[in-house]
Length: 371
Image 1 (cartoon, helix red, strand yellow):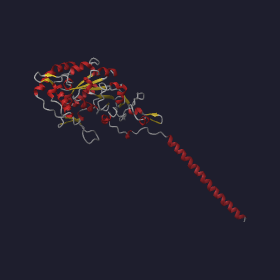
Image 2: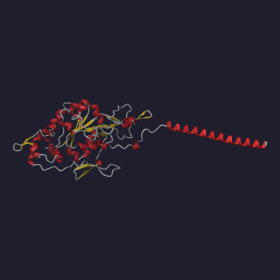
Image 3: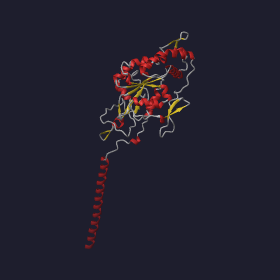
Image 4: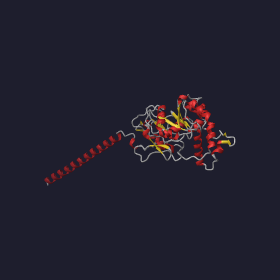
């Protein structure tokens, strides 16, 4: 009987020992679980993975007029770092989530995406001169960031204010140039003073073309949208028998380059202008782009290797970039065939423009050879 009691006590001790070991192991496991969980929570998270960013700067012109503001981000240049003290401007109406994503764990990362700045250079004209081609060619350059659509701030939306305008600009990093193009600025009387109010050091690019050819191209574009438009000669001439030119028609008035330049020279010195030949931009795009890059203080990156001539369109196209399946040409509206205009009407226009062209050659210091 005594031995039986000993066995019971012995077995109970073994059970108690196993239970103690079990609870000890459970406590140790729980301790390590919480330690590891805390370690994971305290570990620094990656701020942003640049590999997941997919912002296409060539599509910003499709998004700009969605409330007239572009996407707030641009693909950052991995070889550059933005200035830590650069002023950040949020586009009006930005989603709260986009603002919150600018911080993670109290660490600001908005500079990763650059800063919205006023443009240091503007393509101010002229309509149907080749401004779209110039802008697309410039956007190949890694140090150029440009708004794709035409903001029309200095002629149509000036009452919205300069901050509204800056919010339209793409984000840029240090060393990059912000640009926009609105060809109607060149012929808008108020535009020079308004641009100077923003920054009198702004560089101004004017793409010019034979004013007679430009007028016909302008008419052709309008005709494609309005097939019922009167004939070119009825719009260009006040009276066919007298041959007087109607300068109230915008297609004619835009070609008076000397008069428009006089307005700009009241606010900016000639050294702030670069006059690009629309004809040479077609025949020698790399040569003209070399001049443009020099004027903007950029390294000559855009060169012959980027272009090939499209015989069908009659325009240079950009060779396909690496990773793309096809080359990039300008839109269907470029290279559109012109209607037949009576030769005597064209000659009267040439005679009319000749003195204005010569005056423009003198003012710009360039002979464009339109006569």
